[in-house]
Length: 336
Image (cartoon, rainbow, N blue to C red):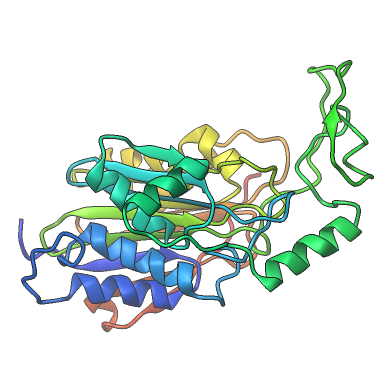
């Protein structure tokens, strides 16, 4: 298929990500190096990399969201809608370009997901440089959080001592805790402490790809992995049906495979916006939460829906909109 409408869509008002992806898609070079060829997969990697390097983007890349121990780790994924191949990393320390490492997982291994320090070891074996992901800003966040008695955090009261809702850690298990207790978390995802860069690209051959990158939730328990590197949760692409990315509370999103749902809804004939809305409406969660899904069809039609966010926006770049990035607000849905 040739002559497909080229388009880039990404979560949040990060126009630099859309521009970087667009530059790859519209590159007329015939260089056959796999990482420079103008295809959808390389475009989404370029878009995510731009966000990972942009210090104005506060929860993607290095030095953003320290965990309970004061350190930043990254989650990332890429998916090729033509081959259905996926590469991903989770809870990876010390490597800045997480999405590029995810692409290495896809291209150079038969695996889908690598995690933790071993993901960083893999990255080094592929030529990536090791560098601390901590920054003066992230250290300051962590110190102030400790001074505030580790509030808020993601541990449920009644299962730890000292009480995580009122006291500073370290925390140890309460062995007489009842697993039947119903308690609310003291922290949720929102625009301030969590936003994932998710990029969708459709190239001139009609191929779709998604790329997703995040430093996750601020104050997360060390080792936590969110929805971003999970296929069908953080992102999903299928050239026959469409592509989608998600952002928000990953601990909720991954339970319902929202991007897989959105793509399958488009396969069944729903518009991108309708598909995103229907996937979000499938969530059964008793507490307030925030999330959004963005989708693109194989024809280049796009749409999005959100819940809980007060100011969710997407970036779109396509010649049909004047060949420059357009930032489009997406109002929050009512779930009542």
